[in-house]
Image (cartoon, rainbow, N blue to C red; front, side, top):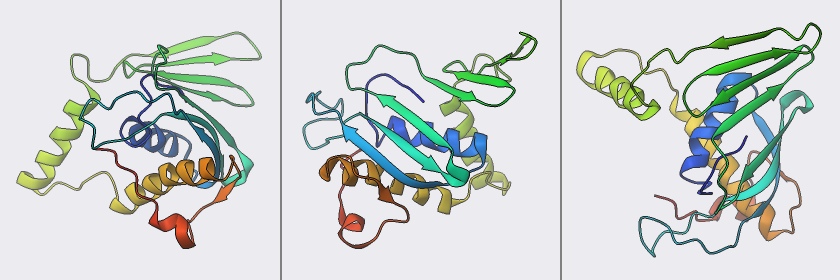
Amino acid sequence: MQWPNGRLGNVGTHMIDGIRMLIGYEVTAVSATLDLAGKPDCRGPSFSDPGGWGLMRMENGLIVIVDAADYAMIPHSININGKKGRAIVNGSNEVSFEFWENGQKDHWADPYPGTTSMDNAVNEIVEWLEEGKTFPYNASEALGTHEVITAFHASHARQSRWIKLPLKGSDREIAVNSG
């Protein structure tokens, strides 16, 4: 996974949610280093939401690489490399597939052209509030994603040691000042 502008607690929540949703595995441990470039947060000096680099160990031993430097200029992207090929989910809600064996490629266009993922999320919330529709996201999943981001901070404080999830002890008391 990669994205520009750091902000593990803000942008990272969406990227980590996305990878957990796409592959269906939970994060079991994190090893990470925060980007201490000191990029000012766009919401003001009371917020500190650095980017960073790290590894997330998932169930079944899968490793996810995270590249989210504060001053990066790379595009949002989730690349899933598998036994038969890879899927690339880019920032425009499109998915490309490349198959190793035969070189075949496929492309899924944005299912909601002209809208952003934020537009879609707000529409889902409004439908839940006003129409009683089932909300497609379980709140406990948000807690799991927050725990991953907190584990990035805990790992950094311990020279990038692996931090197992769920968090225990003083790691549960780490404050992440993202907006």
